[in-house]
Image (cartoon, rainbow, N blue to C red; front, top):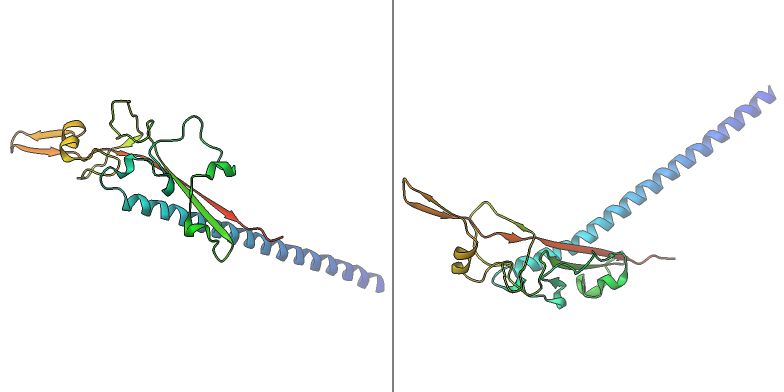
Length: 192
């Protein structure tokens, strides 16, 4: 009888250890998921700041010119895509909140690239020839952003005109838009 009680005691001890390990593993997984979600939310803040800057500066010819103090480049990086894990790839980026860490010790930086081959030129510049990754909006639009500076330039260079011969109506498509690439990075302080 004593022997059976000892076997049951060992089995219960093993079950208790297994239960503790599974609870501990669940806590670690939940902690990792919370850390990952917090990292995504913090990096998203950098993206939101970049989009706000783009929105605030989308009128006129502002986006045709590089503005390194705001982390904006009017052309894509020359050569191969930078290694965004290297600190020297972030020397001309903008730190959200002036680089002040948030409550969790995170610092967020962003950089914006207009997807064009030539810096400081309109998307449709011919000297030198500028090639931009473009999309064409389907609704009505106006000039501005990285587009031509006036309605006349837009109407003469880039619109598609369609005439309805029955009613004599002329419609014009909005100008194409250059793609923009926003890259955000979260730097965390690791306590140790």
